[in-house]
Length: 482
Image 1 (cartoon, one colour):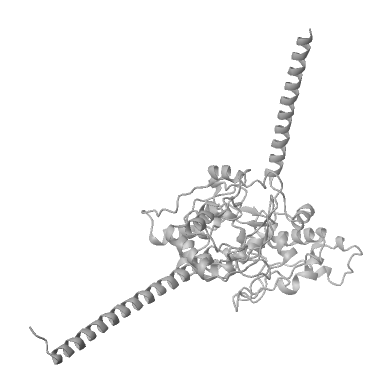
Image 2 (cartoon, rainbow, N blue to C red; image 1 turned 45 degrees about the vertical axis):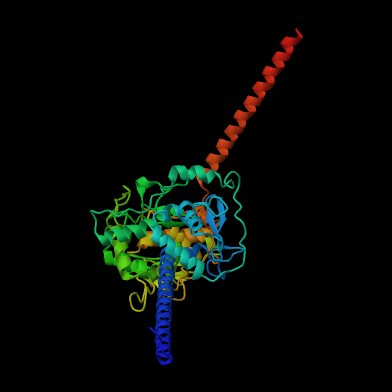
């Protein structure tokens, strides 16, 4: 068939239109794919940010007045100070060169990209529960949602032999469970979500479970309460007397979100940080799921506990008679009523009832029906008097000043024992030695003494072997001379 010029031009126009249409369709499809991929990546980063808040990563990896996640916070532990690392995506001082696999190894196995082991002050024993998808989301957030900071924190300097990081490999063989969380099909979706958060990212057991002599969690007393540095992380198992079994799910969820529940407790110290940095940012459904799970945990009971910590005390006053009386020349001889009248009554009121609770926030809490005065362990009472209660600007206003510079060890002990007898657990007590120890950073771990003894024994064994070898060689030489 012969194609005329007009027919040829028509064909060329149609072919061009078809090609243009095809190219346009391809471009539209490509742009749509890129836009979808970009949206998916943004969603992944956003999810990773939420998970990082659930894990409270910022609390340990940000120094006071420092930049977020740049490290440098000195974490006091019974073995010495551990300095947190820079986990921003800086390629010189952070984790910017980490692959997903290396990030996973650090998060869930406690092994850095250079092969060195992390100390379990980084709660990788709990983060091991995190599933693969959430690890990917966290990686996306830390690589693309965090501002890189090119600063290098000081190195951790623990005493020998704890500075030998390779020893953590043996510790991990004994105490690290590498299996991610496996849902229990016999439980509800909500229960499983709560278990995943409590046991994993929220790492509640890291603080609230007592430790064995090797500094691993005593799983037979999970969530049964433990001393964390200078603070006491109370029993949060389901036991109605020793734990929080008598709290409602709404009480628990409300406490996690705000850090206070009237006639129950108010957060201070590390728990206040966890509320401000982490829990207050979680959804209501996640907080309720955590409450559901906590209410179901195995009860850990202390036979010495006669009633729940919040159930002690009643409003009373016994210092009216001391008003107008001259104070002793030696301030350490001030009585409990005198100290309370001087430092506490203006806020906590004459009968210890507090003021303004539940109006715009926690207000000034009452001293009776208050777990800070109901636990047998009184560290938190002492620490609140020494350091006060500090919350972030976004948290409800709490006005508890620090009296550490105003009151001596003797005065803190006297005042502590007075408020315990007046408003709290009368069987609990505060000692001068306790206050002095808490001011100095708390008690050292028994692992240090155990290790020192083991080193001495090992040195004596080696010395004995050397002496035995020298004596044997000396006898051989004597026999040869004969």
